[in-house]
Amino acid sequence: MADEHQFIEDGLQRSQIDEFFADELGRAGYGGMDVAKTPMGTQIVLKAEKPGMVIGKGGKNIRKVTRELEERFNLDDPQIDVQEVDEPDLNARIVADRLANALERGWYFRKAGHTTIDRIMESGALGAEIVLSGKVTGARSRVEKFNRGYIKHNGEPAQEIVDEGQGVAVMKLGTIGVTVKIIPPGAELPDDFEIHEDVEVEPVEQVAESEGVESLLEEEPEEIPDVGEDEDVEVPDEEPEDVIDEEVVEEVIEETDADDEADEADEADEAVEEELDELDEDVEAEAEELLDEMEDADDESAEADEADDADDAEADDAEADEEVEE
Image (cartoon, rainbow, N blue to C red; front, side, top):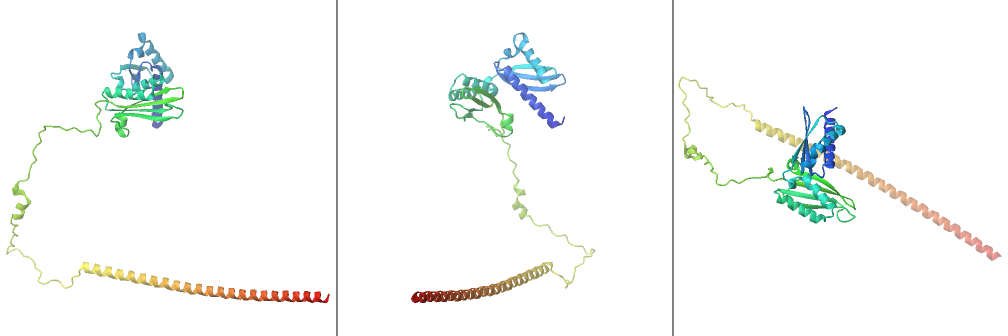
């Protein structure tokens, strides 16, 4: 099996075991679990508000749970260790189950939410948030939030520091989802800072006055050593005549390039103007031809109308003569 599929299988098995414990140990105040695979088997640490109910009389209940884990989830030699939760009001899973039970018993959601979050803050939590979603009061679902203190929603602190638990309250109108987030006391947040008072600060070393900039400027420049008589030093008598200044050559080349580009642009503009003039002449000639054709057509139509009028007049005269003869 590939590593990706193995991770998925392990996560699915872990969530199924968590749901199994929540159903079996709900009355004992189930507060979560930690699973670790060891060479000796599978080590499971349960957190519960009432460890005695998890173990049962004479260990009867814990043996039943162990047998169920072996048969249902194929765990090799599961070893269950039960730990008591020191402060149940700071365990998000236990608080969510308590709030869901209170809603099922008929508590008004606003009173239950404020009472629960006040108990969390009185236990020393740095911050808490309760979210109720569903058909809280009527047939239409909505979301209600209760906030106290400081809470993180994103980033690594939200995953590592914030304790989150969920519960479900089954009501007559429908189910209500309960989500509880708690930042426990003593949590170190990345944006925390401390102010230390009465701390001895070491003095900052200052530069001596003799080493300042002014002292360096006041110092005399070093003398250039004299050249001895025995050493031969070649001194050019005259500057060479054929010396080419590279900067001047570059400026001349740039000017010639700019002049060539300007000439090419002017030639292109002239060619475009000539083409436009030719197009205007062609358009004017076509327009004149169309006007002449329209005038000829008007003349022909006028002549045809006159001929029709003459024929009609002759026909009327002929009819009048026939009537007179009769």
